[in-house]
Length: 264
Image 1 (cartoon, one colour):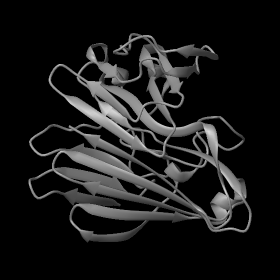
Image 2: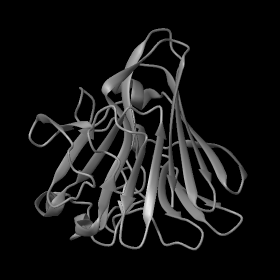
Image 3: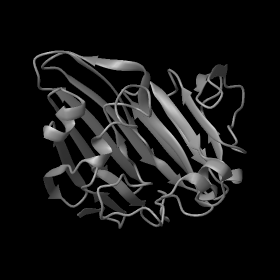
């Protein structure tokens, strides 16, 4: 099932109830900004390759749960859609989630569309009686004309964990240019990062997220990803607002909030 949002001047967004995943964002008088693999099915229980997957309660393989946790694999409930430019989704713990992560929670995702911006707010409420720990991310896939022409600015002098080499480095480049398989977690990252192309830029502003992930699988790994279209790596880059390196400790009854604004 898909929920559609529109703005007064014609911006559009689509959210799949599977994962509460934004799969399309077209600002007013602009082209599509999000990458969605042509070979990723939308009508199955598989995770969707592209858009903005919600990662919770585990990022990647940093823990005992399945990769990237379970939020992106669950059907979220549309709780509020009274406005044509805003929707609120929620996910509560259920038998399937408790089987692999024995905690009570309420996750809420609010998507708000304006003419040139997309706001995504994530809230995690510990509804149980004991503290739990989690990591989270908004795993944003940006659509680009050609990955070699992309410039990512705002990360200079930020330390990052190179997940390929298993090392920690200091980013000296500005802009960051992707020429190979890249998988980095920038720690205590700036809250303002830009994805720039020759014809446009997208500004990413985050709040409540401590880290920024930059990922592109490049040719070899891209070819091995079954739900990534051939040469798809050339037309995407993931720049993700995340909380990974310092997992969130959330006591019973408390709420954690974080947000990401994408703006052209």
